[in-house]
Length: 102
View (cartoon, rainbow, N blue to C red):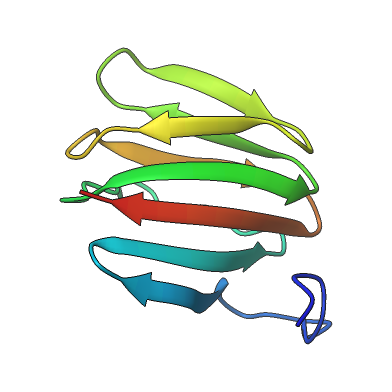
């Protein structure tokens, strides 16, 4: 299996594939193609999330301090549970690896 395989040319919504789901850890491949969060929508997850951009670039906004971080290939961030955040922007194609954990 290759993380860059089987990606459709056009995605109306982000594509999420669960790669591993075991013992309180879930690893997902997420593909964005210019996607962003709907206005006024915030992720507010019960799990911690560690993400890395494998391809492309993106901007995340955090509600608490209205901070925007720009992520390029190889950049990663750890988002603590219940930290409200949203996807502000993605490049034409972004491939993420996300690890959700307790």
